[in-house]
Image (cartoon, rainbow over all chains, first blue to last red):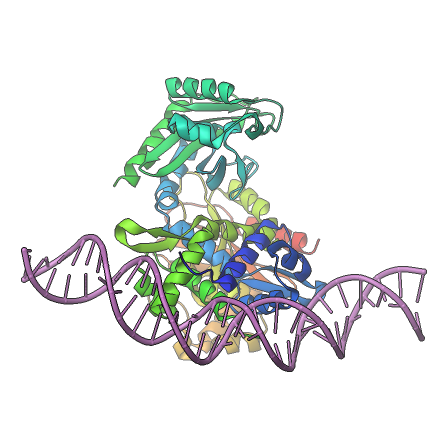
Length: 246
Length: 246
DNA sequence: CAATGCTGTCTCGGATGCGAGACGCTGGCG
DNA sequence: CGCCAGCGTCTCGCATCCGAGACAGCATTG
């Protein structure tokens, strides 16, 4: 087994904690969150500030994210094949259907929004990039779950307790989820209507390439009249899949 | 003076190095880049992988950025007032003028692209988010430099050597730059035509709020006929400035 | 003005993380 | 096939980093 390297681990945890906060926070809060002694926290924060990963705002005695953290995040997008290759097809999809689209990956039983392309005139970023949502409530998540082996879905949703809900709608038990996913498989795409945000609906199709579990989705206002989006979404998912396989 | 916390510093340097690489790299390259002993590098990488900041690809023996690094980057965007507040005005600007727009901040004598809104039908991301370019060549950079005190501009561009060029165009000396910036100040906006990418031109206006040095720009293909963009760009810059001041 | 709570700095001794180095493994190449 | 370069793992002893705690500055409160 490998050595712990606690200082490095703490630094990374501080970064993660800070990134989850909407605004800069006092040092004591960081120390509590990361479970680190006071003095070590200050030493650590100072070192991180030297590297521009955190910024100290002396006037209001808080610490926040630094520019280097931001650059690192975008380094990931450049390096990650999925984000790199999906960008252009996703932009084309938005131009074709005139609605906002996004790309998500599965992270445990949640989906993480990795790319978003806003359609002109729409309020930007309904579901913001970087946000996580329960997979079983989103069209994107359902599209991914539908192509996973049944055993893996069972492991992610062991019982009724695993089923949170935002609006009361959506599956409430493993049985309901199983039925939903088998419908999805039969149709070849996933849907969601008002289960994430009332008044908005989505369709999604999975991107399959080896170990990568992702999906493409388009979201629109329910009251808008949208044409047939399904084919465009499936085509885009297919194209991203093809690109990932070279 | 503060204690070094070398393990944390090394971890951050590894992150920074990895984020600058277009693809995952072998461990030895990382060890060289960060100037760390081999065995320590492996311990560090393992610890970072445990926290999902890096990923090990055993099949091709390389290490790349992990999902946590990405999340941290987007935490910054959420936390940073500039990125948070500029998002919506920038989207409106793109809808108004029908061309791609972006927001940059000054970092030394370079500009860093922080936000980008693509216009429909345009190839996405001419100048990608996260990219740095020499400030004196871009409209965005010139807009910022034009509102800085002369002494600060002199400090950033001490002599002829500071003036790199991509296409041969652009200022080559402190004198030329000074004239360019005084023109910019008189006009109230900055321009650039083919000096970053041949065939593309931009206009930019500065965002001024205390210590923040940023600007908004619109870029278009020279051969396209675009109407009067200047007013829209200046209005947007003004609105972001107002939002930053509450 | 005194009291209080909180932030940031500094010191110092002991535990412990760190780096040198050896070893086994694998895949590429002649 | 045999060789070799480079990758990943492991051990071990010493130097060094870490954490307890004391202290000083600065608000805010009564």
